[in-house]
Amino acid sequence: MDEIIKHFPYLTDIQKEQFAKLDDLYHDWNEKINVISRKDIDALYTKHILHSLGIAKIIKFEPGTFVLDVGTGGGFPGIPLAILFPETRFFLIDIIGKKIKVVQAVAEALELKNVKAEQLRAENVKGDFDFIVSRAVTNMPDFVSWVKTKIKKNNKHELKNGILYLKGGDLTEELKDFPKATEYNLANFFEDEFFETKKVVHLPLKFTV
Image 1: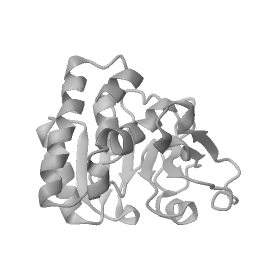
Image 2 (image 1 turned 90 degrees about the vertical axis):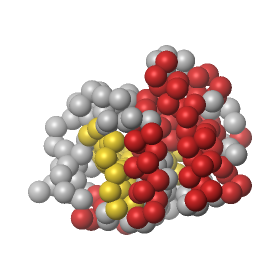
Image 3 (image 1 turned 180 degrees about the vertical axis):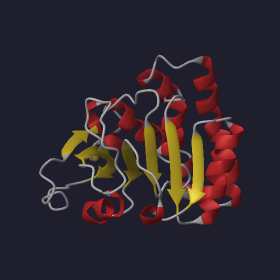
Image 4 (image 1 turned 45 degrees about the vertical axis):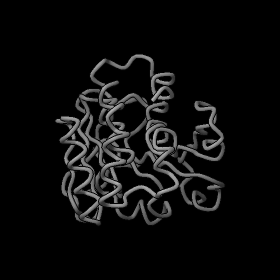
């Protein structure tokens, strides 16, 4: 929790309380439904929450922004981002129903009014979004094929509408067909060695009919 406050010092008391509650909530739910690996649950704040908030080091979502989180699992990156940006709407989806059950319960316990979660495939999502976020659910070419028609036409941020993807390692091969993709190294923002190879990839996507 100290790491969150250190890197995001302007949190309100409500936000601090919500971030603090995540530890008990995820430990309790993980006993019932395994949404976070056993070896990672004790590093929840570094490997899941702070990692999710890496996106917030790249962009500050404006009020009214609409974000889709594809393959959210237990709610990452969507839940931490929803706490940080209460005036941004988040739609969290996953194809595994029990994971969405956990997301819905966590959002309800935190009274996050800006979160909606459903068991749904990305290809079947209706509507369009300013940004689509995810944590390494598949390779970029496949991911783009799922979501390329779901981006809003009008930009309201300096970063163009598109994908914000949390991924690690050498992405040269994976991104070779996407010359407009930009990689941001999270090691530039967070000291923990976990972030040495972790990145946020921004890929602007043109609106298509």
